[in-house]
Length: 174
Image (tube, rainbow, N blue to C red; front, side, top):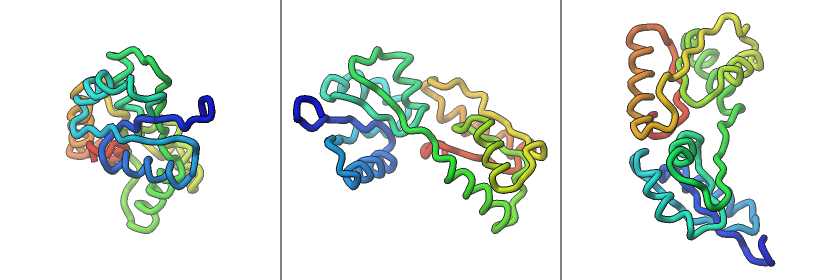
């Protein structure tokens, strides 16, 4: 709260994730007001931010990838931050894919988690981390065609059988 007033946050991301974040923040009853800043294409992020940044006290990105793109091209005039990926959801997804659904999860391609987070998730659910191969998306974070690069990376890893499981952290790539 600034001087007893509610702060205005712009929530930046694809529509589904922005709506989810706005809803969660309303339920938390924090002294902030949220306004969605929705983009349909990843390349729209910089225009969206450059035209609307001055309308808010802070920006919250629903993921790191759009934040990385914007921060490379635009100088923040207000505080910016992004939501980190949820490790508990990752552990549950790995556990369910392997134990309940019977998928081979020994060779993973990923785009949104740090390799140490993936290895920790494996250890937490009882898999030895040395039995896992992790392939990191080689796409350049912050590139305007990042989504296309991520999709191509996962597709190639899976089709060539280097990956048996793709962990896709971005809604548009999924």
